Structure formats: C-alpha cells, structure tokens
Image (cartoon, rainbow, N blue to C red; front, side, top):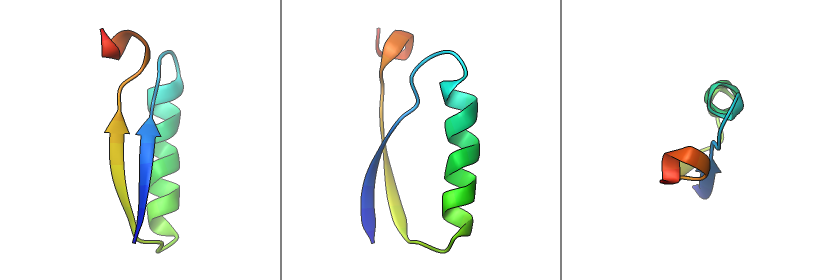
Amino acid sequence: MHNVTLIKGDGIGPSIMDEAVKVINASGVRIHWEEAYAGMAAF
C-alpha cells in the first residue's frame, strides 16, 4: 500500500483531483489518501 498526500488547492483543483483519484483508484493500485489543505480551505 502506498501513502499519498492529496492537496486539492483552490479553483478547479478540487473537481479535477476528485476525478483523478477515481481514475487512480480504478487502476487497482492500493493507496491510502491523506488529504492536506491548502489555499482558502486552509484558512
């Protein structure tokens, strides 16, 4: 299993990263996603 930090950021970042996570998860690679906050979500 791989640990990956997910930083979605602002603007279109969250919607793009949500779809990217779906694609990566569909590949069958076992990943534990650790979400970190950046941009306006961090304030």
